[in-house]
Image 1 (cartoon, rainbow, N blue to C red):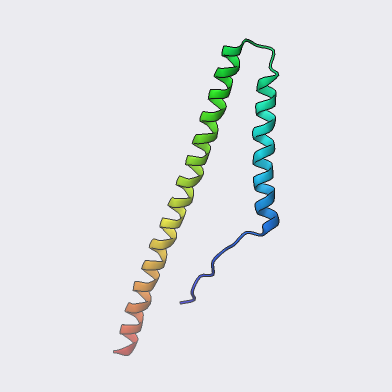
Image 2 (tube, helix red, strand yellow):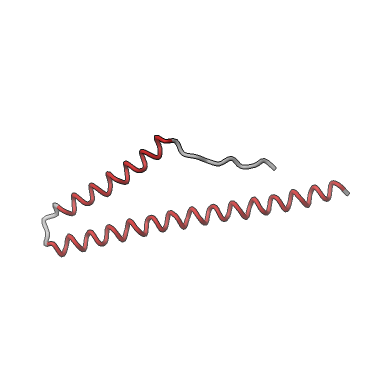
Length: 91
């Protein structure tokens, strides 16, 4: 069984992801600020945007954690199978 390598992202990709997030949040914030509606409507829009951003982070983290847990279970199952096969071949 081969050990799995640790996947890392390039510096350019990390910069792109962070810059894209800042640009998106900035654009929505400026758009909301200049929206020709009353202050309470702008507040409602801002609250909805913040809620959507928060739930997006939560969803991404949950999906990542679920994927990592499945990978761990698969590695554990593979290790048990490998051990059983090795014991069987020794007999």
